[in-house]
Image (cartoon, rainbow, N blue to C red):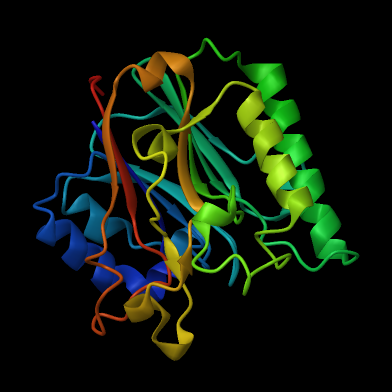
Length: 262
């Protein structure tokens, strides 16, 4: 079971890229979790995915945000949003079950500089996510969280700790919020396999950052202990990022392989 998280930075702009990438991989991705769709559900390219044997559950939003879980295996108990009108004004949460495993796909707010409203909203969003997990799951459940979490865990997750010190995604308060989420009972799968390796998942478009590898690791696959035992591998696929056409996203897909059936 290969589960992938990919911030596409507009599925409309990136449709050709995603389809070409799936063909390039010989359609080996079982569950593809997308973030930052930037469109409402009715404009999502369902037919293109269905032609590849993939069905999609979509929680969209006009021009901003938006998340989807696209799967080759049957999904059940699809939940679009937290079920809270206030928190669901922005489409950032979708979950579904495959077999006895729950997958939650997230697009965490980028936030803002300290003192800005967006900074506080991001902190509150993390607190709400933790509260949601506490109310609905335990660390003994078969649970996977994937997505763009818009934070780097440590300075090892940025190309230059000096250049990016105390900027959005590296501020101590953001990292503390992420670690509190982890302490609920989750493991960062990439760091589990590669404790010391520098590998990024996002590179800005300016200044040839991708070719200089001036990036950040802000996309994650997190899982509870029962699933960590079944995780076989994890990697970042650079093929969709290191190209000029079709126009790439500023993120690369992160793929984890689990030894369990759909």
